[in-house]
Image (cartoon, rainbow, N blue to C red; front, side, top):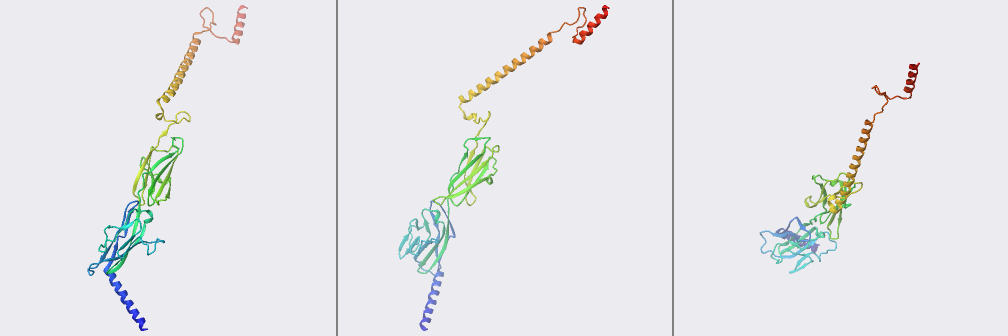
Length: 327
């Protein structure tokens, strides 16, 4: 019983001493850090000591990433122990000339990747106590300028059209939005798809369907990041192929001069021929009317009586009158 009491006594003294020393040392880390994909990222942590600590000296520094199953205590991202620094590739102290008197224990990531996003813990042991603190890294990547193409490539006023916009190289997941030349938004009429690439970055694609007869001159596709800020945009100008003869859908401005002159000459010749034919028909009709008016039948006698046209009944009546006169 006596031995157990002594053991408990020394244990209590150790815990009290450890807690007291811990109060003299505190690791302060920036709560959140933002790193750009493919560039350097800094996880800022500094050791703070109380005024009672004289000549503080760091003996151990341990940096590890939370949630990494394969990572064990003996294989952290950065380990300083007994004057020796062990680093995983891509990690180092922020200050190249770091030493045990330097209270800046910030971690530098030399080439930031998407998988490095997450929570980190920094543990420091000094000659005056120990402390640990957590920080997080948020990785971002800027999207590339969008590209737009149409299906079909040749747009006519009598066909439906689908515009397709693509942008990649961004992180986190962003959004593609559509606007017409009047700055009216058409995003609700589009369908967007986001795919993760092997690098962990997103590829965004969006389709905007346009019905025939309702096509504007210009459409703009804008890419927005996860925070809702616009990063890049591209504009597509609709080139209509105008139709004039049946299903003929070629734009005159896109044709060579030789292919424009020939149809114009043929059409002009047809028009002139029709005008000449119409003039001949009018002239012939007027000539026939003039001949009818100049021809007058001579049906009256020679004493200046007015002439009169008689049908068969009139001839019979005339004959009867002549017979009565002779009687």
